[in-house]
Length: 82
Image (cartoon, rainbow, N blue to C red):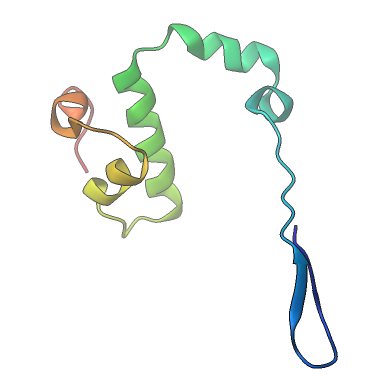
């Protein structure tokens, strides 16, 4: 959600406003805390798979970079490769 207004002279002013929510608020505390015991490589695999559902043309290397994963090859070896 943006709080920017356009004037009659087509000039924008105002502050950008975002509404943030925690994962606990969106998914529920039980579901979030259940993932605490998950291995990082399994979480990374879930992230990659989920992004691929929405953007099947996306290269896995790019998704891993966006996810902030370093050492992506070793983290992904046990998961399925796309």
